[in-house]
Image 1 (cartoon, helix red, strand yellow):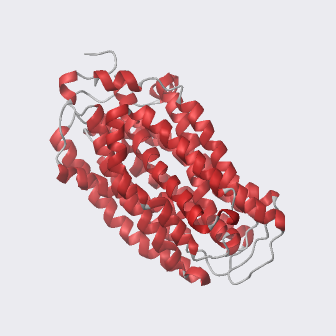
Image 2: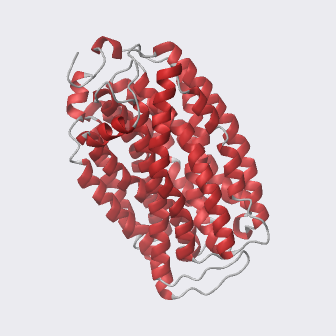
Length: 450
């Protein structure tokens, strides 16, 4: 037994069959809808359809995510309790399958609500949805650490997930604006979009539960699971490698969700074509379908850490190009968004495959659910900080909120805020991620001993 991996080295060399891998990955279709559509449309839905002031809209999206800091580690504890008592985390996964109901309700704001009451409705169902999302995502992401697989096989497993997650992000990112009505989006359009995508989420999440059961049947680890609880949580937070990886991922998550929140504004107010929202989303997400296998090969050749640093640097450079705005020309701007998409693929694959490396190197008394609970809380925090930072930028610029069908004249400062918030802020956040990521030092050891 090595000092890195708390399980016997001989128990980490299983190769996972493709059928169960595909089933496991299918669960990411549903999660892809949840992580994409609220991040892409919810801030715009509040400010330009429900007439919520940007500062209040930002708070309505931030506060529910703040609760995740407590909720996700608790869900991680429950996941470890389930694993210890029942030998799996299936019950939590099934509870999480109620997420599509909360997603549909999120956009089904009653017709008489605007302003603060509408913001309150969205905030309440955002809290409910985040809790259900945690119930599914935490045990889902604990799966790689529960299996008898090594360093490269963990990356392969998460590569399958990444491809399917990208399909979910791409499909929902393209369909959601169209289902709302496109340039003439209405309340009823948002309700229709919520219902249609919720059905697809439900089917995908159930398939994911079945896929996890099949994976566990083919390569479940025979070592008893670690325990959760506050003691285990303290152990996880004291793990130096985990802290640096989580801190870097927080900066990455903040940056990518900031970009998603800014896409509709950048398309309408900087590029002056609302219809370009779907083009920008496609340019951001579609490259991941092509480059994920390439990131897998790069990670095998140079290691996950060095590959991730390259992805982060590329994202920062592409963001700076977007800050130039229209003078750069539409082809250049779309190309810059595509660069962000290539980098985004690496930033989804690599950190998620490094997380089980950290878990496997942790003390045997610490359960995988505890680590993934903190991880998903971090992801949720970044998903809140990104739109909130963009909302603050709009507020400083004096952005004027409106209801559907209105077209208020925005001051020059607001237009500048739209552009710089979409370009400069993500670049700064991603540079912070690079600095934090360089402090993570486990990868070389994990690569040579796993």
